[in-house]
Amino acid sequence: MADEYFTEDHEYIRVEAGVGTVGVSVHAQEQLGDVVYVEVPEVGRQATAGEAVAVVESVKAASEIFAPVAGEIVEVNTELDGSPALVNEDAEGKGWFFKLRVGDAAALEKLMNREAYTAFIAENG
Amino acid sequence: MRYLPLQEADRAVMLQAIGVDGIDDLFVDVPAGKLLDEPPALPLGKTEMEVERELGRLASQNVAAGSVPFFVGCGAYKHHIPASVDHLIQRSEFLTSYTPYQPEISQGTLQYLFEFQTQVARLMGMDLANASMYDGSTAAGEAVLMAHRITKRSKAIVSGGLHPQYRDVIETLSKHSGKVMDALHADPLGQEDLVSRIDDETSCVIVQYPDVYGRIQDLAPIAEAAHARGALLVVAVTEIVSLGLIKSPGEMGADIVVGEGQSIGNGLSFGGPYVGLFATRQKFTRQMPGRLCGETVDAEGKRGYVLTLSTREQHIRREKATSNICTNSGLCALAFTIHLSLLGQTGLKKLAEVNHGNAVVLADKLAAIAGVEVVTQAFFNEFTIRVNGDAGTIIDALTERGVLGGVAMSRLEPHDPSIRDLIIVASTEVNTDADRAVFVAALEDIVR
Image (tube, rainbow over all chains, first blue to last red):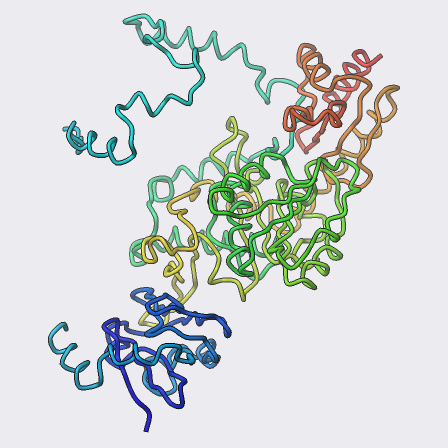
């Protein structure tokens, strides 16, 4: 069972064997509307926590995606290039953006679990 | 009522923030004696008729392009513009329309922008073009920045055949963001070696086609060499009519092609406003600056046009936008589109042939003058001559004899002594046999 965390910027990171899969939450894709483009980072890039590493564009807006914790980008979702709608269809599944080798596992504990995130959304809209 | 939002207190806060005591401190860099210390000596009151008479007297000191045999080019060209172009662009639906954010009320504007993009992309041999830039030089600057974004590198190699003012604009846009420019020396004979300078830091090579000296060269080897090192080829076209006759930059492997569109539909107008052209490959669309108009269907399935991919732009993306360009040369783009539509493919080719033919006739006549050498071998409607003296002095002497006989290269490169004897001469469809005869006789008289 993977450990699942959420940020206040509505990214999720699901960690398995030290590698976190990052994308935006189902709630975030609802807010974005139809996603038309995702710019993913370069594999091999070292990201610091909170660094803008990807961009998601919808018909309404362009938003940056931040690295939830520090780490190295080890894989990106190339499917999004031709099918950005995957973010809308399956945000927390096939619509992932990139995988990150977690450099700072302790930092994960500062993020929210699903329960806390659900409460966060309810409170902040 | 005038809206003046700033109060003295606001100004004081802003001056304090940048660390100066007063407004006058902002002008300390202006050389002494260049600032006015009292208002200019103008009469307090004059009638309209008096003002018109005085301004007319001042204006008559100019040698107007249309009043004498005219052979000046170098980035701005005198072509015939049909009266219908001016008539059509002055229709109020076009003349006063603003950026077409609302497609439901802007179909006319959007459609002509779409047509404009299609024309530009086809001329340049590229997949797509945007809805225009300010002018050729700023488009070139934006192209270099775009190449930096795509390659994530920061060095541009600038050909010595690029118009020096384009080079300066690229430098201005690059230098404050830590970008590197490797600019080669003036290259009137086409001897420079761009390829060996390309390395793994190079984001792009930028060349002009035909170059500032008028020379046409095969760009394919440069494109191949650039691509082999992961760099892009950026091509600038200052005389767009040339593409009616010569191979397009896209066919030779260019990744970004920019141009000055003034030659089609737009007059010289003392240097502006002009219209910048910008085209690229499909895969680079997201990194392109500027407005882009797209074709779609409405709710009833009817064809319609909208601004598209706007998330690249500053009104949505703010400081992360691909460019800070916004409302720009729409009306000049319209003039371009109307003129090119009137010409059509056949007309453009014919126009280009007349231009080239006139230039060849002129080059032969000038080459026959003792003391004058034509140094450009392959050219379109512009070529470079070497004279047996200071080119600037000879241009002045020609002007006194009532001929505007080209551009002394020293005017564009004042600090380079190697080009002091070069004159760049352009000849378009407006030049007649009589114009050429006056020019040749005057130059013969001067260099003798």
